[in-house]
Figure 1: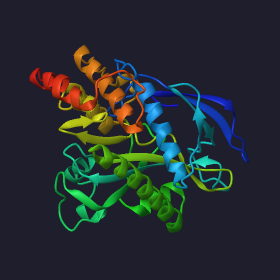
Figure 2 (figure 1 turned 180 degrees about the horizontal axis):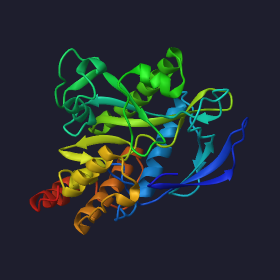
Figure 3 (figure 1 turned 180 degrees about the vertical axis):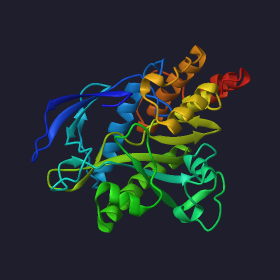
Length: 320
């Protein structure tokens, strides 16, 4: 379950066997860990579902297994489900979600959380393998593989791999296997983005251990919600939604909530977005899905036309 998609359990997983579930992708969106925001983005759920299904199919051709079973409609995805363990260490590392989010970073854009963590002194450049303070928008070779928590109220980044291993209960070998898998997934997304002329800044993925204890990709990956792309100056990702709220009083209040770890009933209510911006983001998700999959799932303008016309109009009105 999540703030933007629902999970219907068809067959419950057991201690030994995987179950079956269906993700239903909604048109909801979430920013800054708030959860469901007050607006909906029409067609967003279908676009995310179709993009992620395409990615799972393509990655399977490269020998990368996932929990993907098949589509059950345009916004419903049938998947294997495993157990979620939020406390303690399991007796056996199998048939379970790995309690980590794995982030691959190719370029540190201005909005990257890395710069905020550096500024707050939460990490040093050396923690990320840098000899000095990193540059904005400089391509990283090799990419950075970063880790954060899962199943906590707010995502929490780990400072180093020792913290990652302690949290997950894994040894060096398993962490290396996860990092190698992330690099392969990132490489696939980079290649597809390059074919389309998109810039792939970063993204995130999740993994699970199947009933035999082998890694498989889980949740969703390679979409505009999980990854950040740019194309001809357009923030081709959920970043468009984040940017509307960036620097607002609401964001400042959310920062205070996180710092003080306040209960959700004390969180500030976010303002709604202008309809013109909602409509543009809806078309952006649909057009991106069409181009990424190479299929015309939606009857919308192409990205080039959207940027030349609608995006320029938003910029004039100060909405982008």
